[in-house]
Length: 464
Ligand code: BGP
Image (cartoon, rainbow, N blue to C red; front, side, top):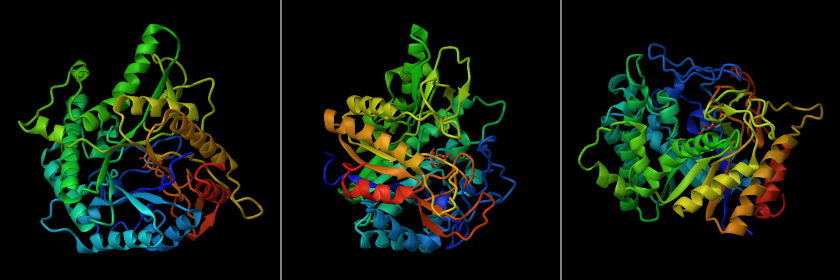
């Protein structure tokens, strides 16, 4: 059995659901200008700083105005928690202001009060790829150490304002994505620069900012629990060739564990030396990392990959990171290889390495759902995906006593895809009538998975 206070819920991100991208005093964030793509042309997280706001799904699903209706539906499903992010540029429109934007703070006050009405615990991501665009244009994004002060001021503003309303936080969504897609951290790297060196230096600034935020959160409210959040990449060796096994070992270490090592253990691991990167540190940085260790490990898990020391063969897509095709696994229409056993592998690895509580804060199946002739959405494929992953998660929790805080199904309501900017790639138990071009009534509609997930939660995971 899962513990009786297991945090069942769903997850979204401000930039993928709120809309109202210039309302309530909000400034432009980098996600407001990222180009949209489609499943054949995954979004290029290039930031064309000359253009303003040409992301076609600016209004997303207008959660900013629909949040009461949506939260009522989450409550109907029995949610005990709800993960979303606070849009940094709602609170500090440019990011470097002295004073926060009161309208932005008041919106999230209303949101948290609405959740509280239904006894739904907010799980808040402080930065989910939503940094203010001005911090890129004026400072160069996270490559500039000044971002640390701007971020810490923003985080402290949140901890003080929402003291007693929010106690679960995560500092950066998928902090490892900075290495794969530096533009996500507002870092634009020129041809003549060393991408690795610039990316890892920007990441270092984020590590310091995260550690300072963790310490501030604990100082402001001892009830605060602050997690790191990593995109997990499980890679299986293509063959039993020792070099393929070594490639798989490094894929997991360098793609996932390194980021947890720094934020959970509070220091750069010795193997970092093999990266050949010379991080510019300031004298207190080592002490800051040591004092800012996170309380839990939040992570996203969607799929697994296959790796080899020579990556020849059919490539498959994945959550930001590609891999080779696994002949034993099916893939989603976007090429993400479906592997519930990989979740067990990953949970064991993380828990045995850190012995800190885990939190599955993203898991789900992107699918181009259609409305059937009977007017319903029979997403049995999504029920099958979620059932198999919840079964896997339960197995290791119950048999191996892994401490798992909760499970928030990603995109519990249809939202804009981060990777492609499409609405077509739907994850929700709630359908939203909106297409890739932003047309539609925005009406919400329960899919078959709505009643299924309601049953899962009411039985605390027993009735799958
Ligand atoms: C993760 C992000 C989420 C979400 C998810 C699904 O990387 O944290 O924001 O988008 O991926 O990806 P996509 O929306 O591209 O299907």
